[in-house]
Amino acid sequence: MSSEESDYEHDQIADGQLEGEGESFDEDDELAHLVGDSDSDEAEGEPEGDEILDDEIDELDAEGDMEEDKAQQENFDEEMDEDEIEKVGVVTNTNKDRSAMDNLLAKEDLGIVNSRIQESIRILTNFRELRDPNKTRTEYMTDLKNDVMTAFDYNLEMVEIFFSLFPPAEALKCIEANEESRPVTIRTNTLKTKRRDLAKTLIQRGINCEPIGKWSKVGLKIYDSQIPFGATPEYLAGHYIVQSPSSFCPVMALCPQPGERILDMAAAPGGKTTYIAQLMKNSGVLFANDVKAERLKALKANCQRLGIKNTVVTHYDGRKFPTIMKGFDRVLLDSPCTGLGVISRDPSIKAQKTYKEVMKLSHLQKELILAAIDCCDFKSKSGGYIVYSTCSITVEENEEVIDYALKHRYVKLVETGLEIGSEGLPKYKEQRFHQSLKLAKRIYPHTHNMDGFFVAKLKKFANGIKSQDKEKDQLSINRENAIKKNKEKKRDRKGRNKNADSKSNQKNLKKRIKQKKQESKKQSEDSKETTEKPTKKEKKQEDSAEESKAEVDQKSAPKNKGKKDKKKKFQDYKQKLKERKEKTRSPRKEGKEREERKERKEGQEEHERSCICCRA
Image 1 (cartoon, helix red, strand yellow):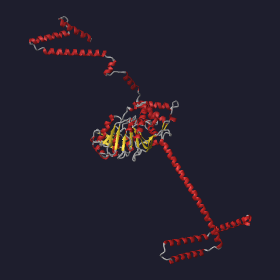
Image 2 (spheres, one colour):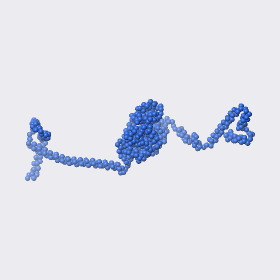
Image 3 (cartoon, one colour):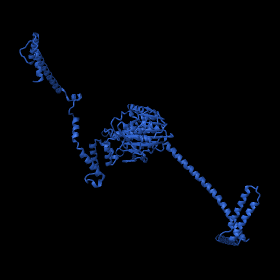
Image 4 (cartoon, rainbow, N blue to C red):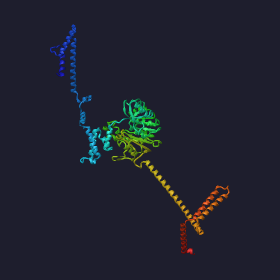
């Protein structure tokens, strides 16, 4: 009996009762009759059957209500359409759910996929010997990429980025490292406590922690904790902050000094700004800027909790900041990026990000780095440095941006001073960047067990825009002119020195010629006077006699004479000795002189014979 028929019968019975037609009795009529009987019994004072009748009436009413509810539900289900069901939110087997189930069923076993990945990598490492002759390298690479996509749920464009950066085996290690969870790290606030004291108190509270490494004097690793380490009294008092170790590196490269004027262009949520203020020892001025007002709340809260007093929080677009304020000693730009280095913390990146987003962010990063360079003051005595960092490992967001800055501003790359990280990439695919990009640092998850990061340090040496055309570049023109002037000055100096040398040489030559003539005259006179040579004994005797004479002269001389007389006598004595030495020469020299004299005489005689003037 259907619900419609039952409703119809109930209506008929109700009509019959109103009109006085009681010929046909059903269950409802019986109920009415029983109810009437009960009333009569009550009137007569017979209370024995009252409880039985009440129970039967309740049971019948409950059965009727149940039947009505079922009928209403069946009518509602028949009238509802599929669109209305989706609006209400009822779970049904829609096309989307069916497609998702089909995809899940279509997936292969992960063990089979992983074994296939390992086999393809083994072949690609030794491709010449292990390859299939009917299969090319590109086919192997496509199969490997597809297997990686199915095994790790990556987007195709993200997989291509990883395989373009690394060889196949290293790319797989990097992808696997992004799937692993890393230990939580904290940074101690040295404005309020020391790392040793903080570690002791945390261990007493049941938190196992150790220092990160020798390269950091502030970081601690947390392995196990019996209590939430974000709600300890030390955390609330500002003794430490939860921060990844790779984000220490930009601040360490910036190397802020006390009393400086520093800008953090993208500061929120405040991990790096608080570290800068910590190294500045709450002195100087630190401007913490961010575009999003929502993120500034966390920045302000962290600054207040850690007890930082030298920060000024601003809310401006970083690209327009040079029009508002300039003249900073140091600038830190932790630029917004795709976050391909922090996939372990946000797995949605590997499926959502695309190459178009990478290029959009690269354009934004180029604008921001030019603004950061313009904000810096190259005349700063202690600074003039800009540090650029990202939590991404793509070349488009890192090396390409730095190379753009080197071409358009007067900056140069400088060593970061970091002990951790590998060198930057001056080459990528067909692109060739500046060779100084080797000074930048790259941090990878699979080699350093930290989040992927990029850090580069720039030194500004002049203001202005560096145009690619040398004719329009004023600074390059000025430099070339200065170089030319310096070269001309050097040439003039060399020319003067040469002229001076030539004049002095001429004078010296004349002097030498005169001296030679005088010596030749003396030698000729001496040769005429002394034909015999003195013996050695005679020389000694003469020398001793002269020395004795000099001593006698000195003794006989009056004591009141000045020092000048003594010097003159001593000089005269030296000259005499020189003259004796010149007289007593070796036989070789004398023989040569004799030959020269003979030749001169013969030449003079021939000249007299031939010359008419001499004959006359």
